[in-house]
Length: 321
Image (cartoon, rainbow, N blue to C red):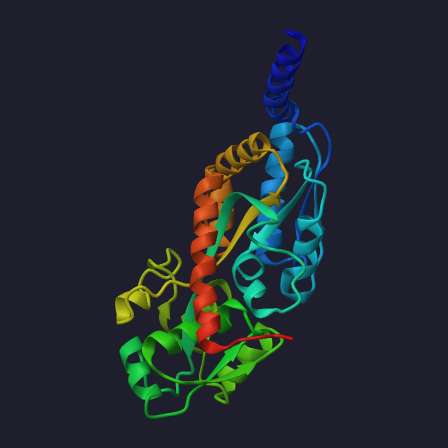
């Protein structure tokens, strides 16, 4: 009569020990970090910086695989359905995990159910810049001008950070502007410099040089605080729209079935890497704000971003077939 209970007890003990043993042995082979965008972008830079350090610290190779397409959906879907053993990770983004699933009707992944958050890696603020011919220097002046003139803003695709920044600005500011989408920043910037387009909420690293040269006028940044790279430029929140906070963000996530012990081990390692002065310096110079989070913190952060954008998208009625 004692055999069955004893066997059950052994099974329970073994099941509890298995994840701990898996984490202790992890990693024992090559790790792949999927970047769902083209090489050379911010997500690629972050993945390679983290991957290089992770490989040096743990003595296992880390490869970066770029899988661009469909606004990040192709690479994101691939990782969602990967073997949940901790050897395939995703450099997730605000677009793929908090915006696109509410815009695209055929997304083949669930951003909440299919992934386990590991850690935030970095945020990038946008900068609101306008053509110098526009008679505005501040957010209140821009809002007042927009209420009596039909302004045109550039964006880089439906659901992109410049687009969503403008949508939130219109909603919170009570104005309406015309969206002209471009394939990328070079095209959009050319039209703003020509004066055919009035303004853009561009990623700070690409907008800042234009503002410093005087070719465009920097009105504000979109995050919750001023940027170290442009400390004299106020936030939109402090300029009359309290609560305005839009950033592009990137962070590591794993397929949903990866053991918590492995996720926690990865999260601690990412925090260690991002705390290194030389790493922070390289990422800051590139225009990012490096920041780590625990898996629980990152999960809460993603949930908050999803709720924010789900409401904005529903209010505006954005959809991509």
